Length: 579
Image (cartoon, rainbow, N blue to C red; front, side):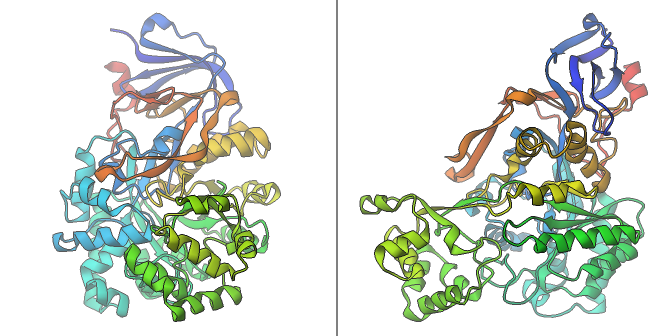
């Protein structure tokens, strides 16, 4: 019997701890790193398989803490795009959204909700979701049985808990009774006892600019929840030795500190994002994060560092849900939307909204919309024009030119929106802090608009290799060990002896994203499509010691694990060595 299942030989090792790189060998047995030899003296004959990593970098697999893969992981065990871009562990149940606990009679309504708020294709959910659970513990049991190509950690999402205890309409309309609060706290406790990594919530407010909406245009239940209910959930978390809280919230930053103090748990704040024109917007958040950590609160900032460009069409788009005027013309079927857009009163309302300068905070000003693809021959002349150019060419108000164009094509016209977060100096300010984690792939969400699951590759290519914002040692700490530390991934995120072998072997100098522009593929259930971008340069992706991708090609292996409380079923080093 050989000493190792696999030896990774002669690679430049970045262990994720911020320690200096070194050239050496890594020996793996039974899914665990059993030997790290900085002298590179491991005997190839002592392993069943040897990976020649000479001239390549070896690092921990990346950890993606904000994904929304709750539906997709059921038909795509590798959580792609993330799995294509070096991610070996993910968290699901983000933002307080998820599918457990959900009573059978509410399953359709839950999918409708996610089809709007996270833009997950409805028909794919109907065809691809298994629905072998009702409670949150049963959801974890389902994940435990499922074939997984990545490791999965699950938050207990607050939205389904509120709906289960109060009913959907009541949860949006009022505060809970004492009995309902007690029931919700028990449901949260049940989820944490079963292995949930903590709880998640998104609170964008009841008012005008809540940008993520239910499928009927009303706020999500978590948008309407009270501070007192959040405090009750924080008190539940305080009773556990592990776990953390993920929160997205508009304003109320000192209240987030209060939650940290009540729960005595790390909090992952979403999100920190620069704005090329308005740097004070992110500097306010960064300043608060710095001060709150100085006050002793364990609060981290999840940073959006990918260029936040979008491709979209208005038969699908939900990016203008922050204003009532736009919701009035973008809800319902395509036919209903077209009718609303042609209504003189509703059209005047969106013209007024545009003229008054209240642009959506998600998409930025309409001047950033460029016509990417048209479908009628007479409209081909407009491809490549920004909306102000189209309006000037046609002698129309911008909103009229815009709506007339998309109506003529049954809302299928594809637009591109330029990113507004690419100022290298501003992004370096975010990265210079020691409390910011690159991420927010939203990998399983907005699949027809975004390819943000490429963020680890983009980070290495642009922020490290091109702009030199940090060393590779620091970059691999940020992509792996830092999120593991925040989220409680036990023994993951670093290459150390005794750790599970979640490992990447990659060609740093030839790492690239392909194609340059996202392409459309029909690989979702029910024939649905999404936009994708792949990676080149990841030679081997290994999860729990088993190779899942070689040069971007999937091996078909599914060694991923459900990580209850952040810990999988891996054997320890002594067991591995004695096997």
